Image (cartoon, rainbow, N blue to C red; front, side, top):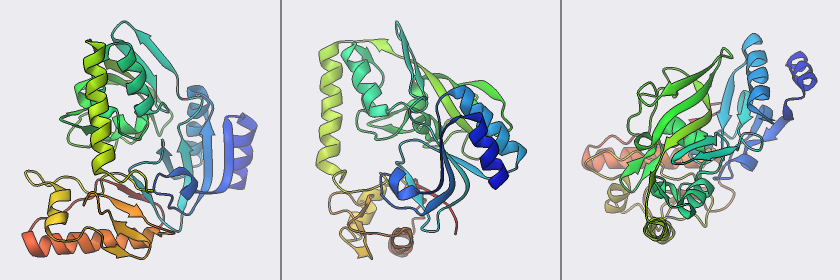
Amino acid sequence: MDEFISKLRELNIGTVKENEPMANHTTMKIGGPADLFIEPSSIENLAKAMELIHNYELKWRAIGRGSNLLVSDRGIEGVVIKLGRGMDHLDLNSTELRAGGGYSLVALSTIISKKGLSGLEFASGIPGSVGGAVYMNAGAHGSDISQILTKAHVLFEDGKMEWLTNEEMEFSYRTSVLQKKRPGIVLESVFRLTEGDREKISSAMQKNKDYRKETQPWNFPCAGSIFRNPLPEYAGQLIEKAGMKGHSIGGAQISDMHGNFIVNAGDAKAEDVLALIQHIKDTIFDLYGVKMETEVEIIGRK
């Protein structure tokens, strides 16, 4: 690893930190240190870093704004790549939008709404990055990324870059081809929007934001929805029906506002959250015979 770090620093790719606490980079404020943490300053520098990672056969993981992640208390082996500054470019040409993987989804939806363009209203309260949203086909309020994405520029672990069409992304509920089939990093995405009434768009966005404020506990550190909805059932409703809202293990607590949110109520550890997740799974299966699957990504050393 020392030789790798030395060569990486020579490339001057951006921020490089050893043993960086992941609690500083997740919305849940939980997570041990990453062996190596890098924040590339451009797509070109990220490609250089990935080529080096591939040559040294190191494990790697890309993150955006740290939502939808639960990182082990023991941290992450290998390299964590954060898409942030330098990967947050934006270009709008009529109704075609091209955005960097590090761009904030909330900020993007706000900017677009002010220009009278429709398509991103559903994203007005999703606290992630463009890259992360495309990676997991983020959605809300009856829509998702797959409805507007034209193509995604992806960097694969062998260092090759490729534009994937909407069809090639193989979107389904909260998943894409990048999660297991073809691991890669979303560098930038192109979205197809439509012209609309600015006031109606802003009104719809505000309604979505208000709904989230009223029903979801974003005033506490949390990762978003913990479980996928076992349709036709809804995870939050099942957990509430089971009388589990407010239940806690250590510093982790099932939110009083929404059953499908676990909040860091004070110095929670990943092991507290994992224990609570398992308790929910067992309880819901025992009561209703429903198998609960996590939507939050659980990563790091076991």
